Image (cartoon, rainbow, N blue to C red; front, side, top):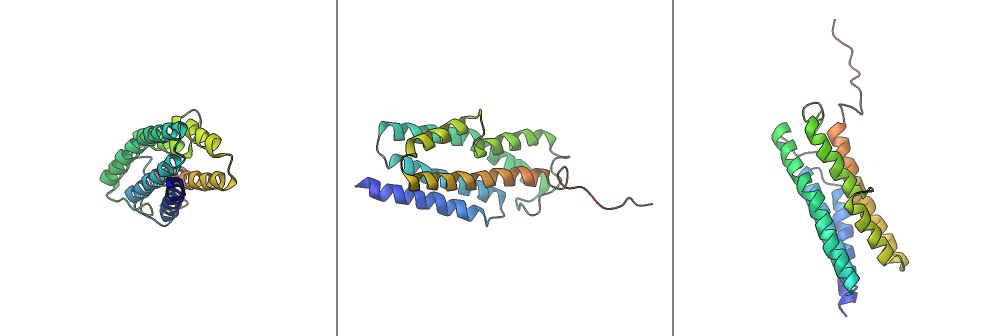
Length: 173
């Protein structure tokens, strides 16, 4: 009975939060929406009501906390340093915040689920556990892909105008 309620509720929550990320400009809200998406994924996992689904939910909470806490601290550091959380206004952070780049890259890699990070193994377990149903598998791909776009956005905004793009203005004489 609960599966018919929890599974769609978890998927809808995760998918809507993932879609809202695409239209958000505030860095902390972007991170908050990824947390809401993760909570939807946890509800999705718990809907199966098995020992393995509980294990996956707890493991996901742990992995999520490991990368999300440093990312929120980084967002606060960026806001303190630049005076803004608007990702469209953030530029040239790398030259002024070189040490924070490591946190940004590791956090983005974890959101993306790159090996050998814990989030890679947790996402792999999700795919193994839910791989039998095509729509569940497709839903997971969409959720994880949208989380990947957040990771890309974090690193891109950290590096834009300092490494990726070149200053094309000519030097003054």
